[in-house]
Length: 182
Image (cartoon, helix red, strand yellow):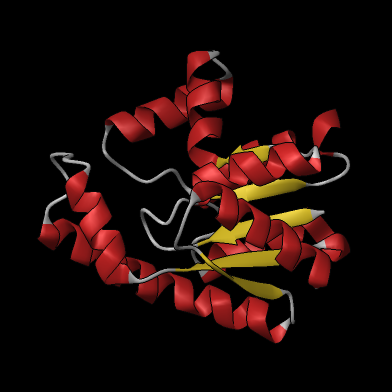
């Protein structure tokens, strides 16, 4: 099963991706983890990514797709995977479509959360970059960048919404149930 998890910052996508991946026996592929893996292992792609990130720039889609292409070709991804953090833009959707060809994604899990409650949770964790203004800005960027993706995947009929509020285990159970209903 080829899955993509989408939700606003702080919605628990990474936590749920790890838990659901373990239950389904497929890898959780996070672009951030992928970047760190290449950098820490000193690969040629890692050296390029490291220089870009140290300059404070975004890693270009071409490099991200190159890394992702290598990652999904690994044996543990033969039966599927969960993507977390990519794609984030319509151009990245096109790149992912090219990479996965006709097989594409099976489902896009959209985590529905109450932004006010989520903001409260993020403020409570006490991180220096979690100010009210920064959190509000992250939510705005998420809405602007993600809505076009939801429209594309919605038209394909592969989105499934899951209530992302509550206990971690309950949310995992909701995701698994939603995947088996669709």
